[in-house]
Every structure is written in structure tokens, then in C-alpha cells.
Amino acid sequence: MNSRHSRAVGRLRRKGEHMATPIVREHMTPNPITVDVNTSVAKAHRLMQEHGVRHLPVLNENVLVGIVTFTDILEAASQDSNRLNLFEPISLLAALPVEELMTPDPVTISPDDTVLEAADLMFQHDIGSLPVVEDGSVIGIITTTDIFHLVVRMLAEREQP
Image 1 (tube, helix red, strand yellow):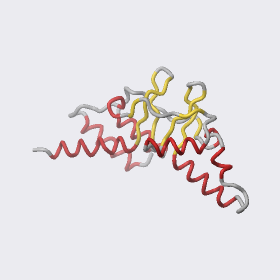
Image 2 (cartoon, one colour):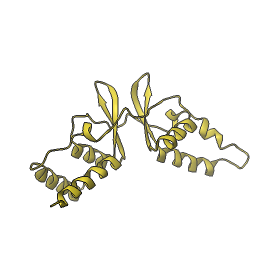
Image 3 (cartoon, rainbow, N blue to C red):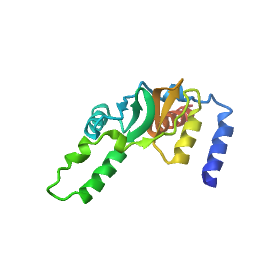
């Protein structure tokens, strides 16, 4: 973690002592859309488009084993378009199971952790989302977008006379 980030987190923690500390449970998306390890990349992409999400927790027998993102799919498609010749179908990528593209063992967070802890984890690991896990089950997901919305709302409330 760089020193500028450390100082900013320290200032936020000190300022946060004067206001209610938001927790993940209050700002996560509950019951996120998930996919199985054998779900095709094409189906995962379709689910992302249909539901307006960019991150899908990947489960194997209801246990979190990874996360697949829209960026993972774009990067794989870009690599395949460079590698495949014109006569090979791009559908090879679409038919792959998400297990081939996912990030295994994703960083997770508890629903009772603070949003600041979530933001700090995302920054440290350079990721855009955290599956929220309670008692071994994925109960939600919190994203940088969720945190940004919270920050904007808090700033707007602070500006109110």
C-alpha cells in the first residue's frame, strides 16, 4: 500500500469517528447473480448484459471458488482474436467454461466489516468487487460503484445546511 493511500485511509478513519461507520451489509447488492464453474463464457456474458453487472461470483457445488469479470471476458476475447486465424471460430472462447477465465480464490469480505475496509481491500488488490461471504455462503457483492454511490451520498448530505 502506498503512503498517500495510507494517509488518506488514516484521515478517513479519524473523521469517521464522528459519524456512523457504514458497514458492507448496508451497501452491498444482496443475493448476487452467480454462475457455476461449468457455465459457458457466452452465458456468463449474457447474464452480465441482462442484469447490468460486471462481476459474477463463480460457485462449485454452492462453494465460492472464483470470480469472473467483464474485463476477464474482454481480455480473453482480445487475446483469442490475435491468436486465432480467420478460419477458426471465435465461438471457441464463448463455449469455454468460466472456470478457464475466472480469478480463483477471490478476496472476500464479511457483511459486518466496514465499507472502508472493503475499499481498502479493493485498493490493495486492485480489484473492482468483493463477494460478501457469511457462514461460507455468498450473500452479496460490493463493488467500487456501490462505494462511489455511498461517497457521493455522504458528500451531498454533508453539504446540506
